[in-house]
Length: 276
Image (cartoon, rainbow, N blue to C red; front, side, top):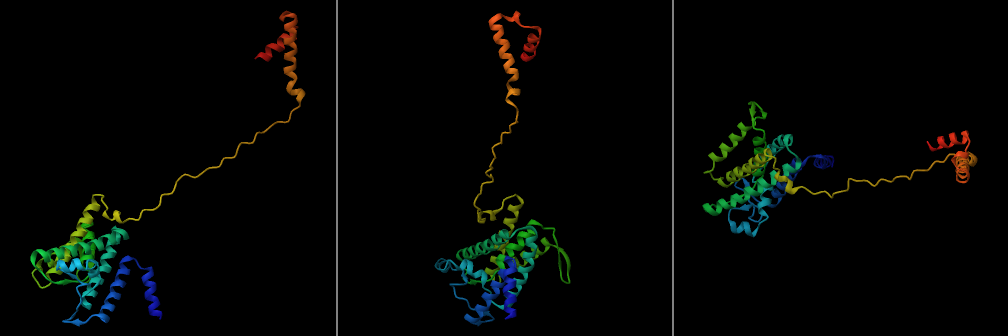
């Protein structure tokens, strides 16, 4: 039970690429229980594996997605998952989780469409399984975005990442005429998705934005409550407040009755000062 709990914990805390690794392993275990292993590989039905026969692909449209989670044999799964682990680590150096999911699933989807189209135009009949196209898309995205990024390969030393990308492309092209023609077509198609994605990103175009979840806009303004200013009053005597006004009124009344000349010198000076 401790091992199972450890696996659950690793799945919960791992990033998206690690979750995909666990999912692929789980699907492989289920495949081992449900499908026969003949000629050193699982015999998947055409309603799970992707068929190059366009009629089967149209009858089972979900196979353009399901084929990417199936693997033909243990060594196929092991190589893909090791490659996915290291490639995703490189990918996250430059991109985000949304970018990863976009490249991974678009790579698989586009490679599936090209595989079916190849079967239709060249009369090629076969089934395809594996996450290789998705992983190739992720790898080529990094190799295109940062071609001079150095990586260290065990026993071989340091290489520019574009050197390794060129090597993989060369291998796929060289093996196009082998029995796994469809698989190599899918690899190259997935790599093309990664290449296009990275080139667009360099130009400031993020195709993953179409899959972004729009957040509900919230107002950035906050209602501000202002307290009405409290009027402050000074306590004064009424006689002090009205004293000057009373004197002015008395002088004005005297002027109205007897004229300005009737004012004394002190009254004239007081009135002059009050007018100022």
